Length: 191
Image 1 (cartoon, one colour):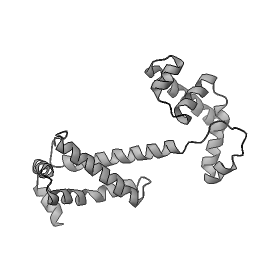
Image 2: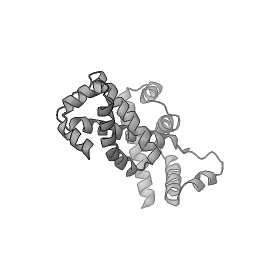
Image 3: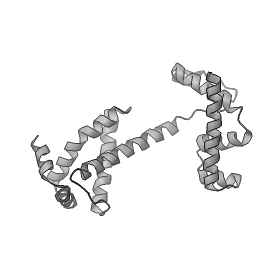
Image 4: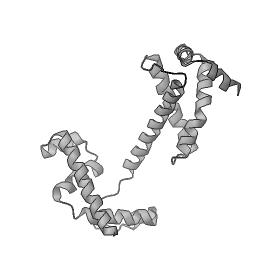
């Protein structure tokens, strides 16, 4: 509780100066006072305690680096704490996105048994995967190519644009349209 009062009494400008000077007390105070908020956010958004530590440390180092390089100038006393939380939140969102991309399921059935995949998923997920697979086949060839290149082969929009002789913006728009078509097909299947 004494540290909370110290942070309230210390303005962001003083805290920034202490961080630039690598003041161990100020760094520890900032670290300890903001950890619970980030921990709560990550745990409430599908995270584990080990992940909290890693994400928070990355965020804290990024904040420290940005302060050292004069890339952050606080607008108020709470700006520093908000900045640290925003960095941690963005790092967690990036982590969730990268995890989602790693769990790629093939869109086309290559004749192999899909029991292994379906056994690893719960019933709702496996049903959805089957709907995606079945409806994917009903998309046009260009949409199938585009979605496969982007999600399965992990090609960038730039690479896809070059392949189809489009601009990057056109590739992005076409990817969106193809996904909308797939969503509509899935929606109609559910009905």
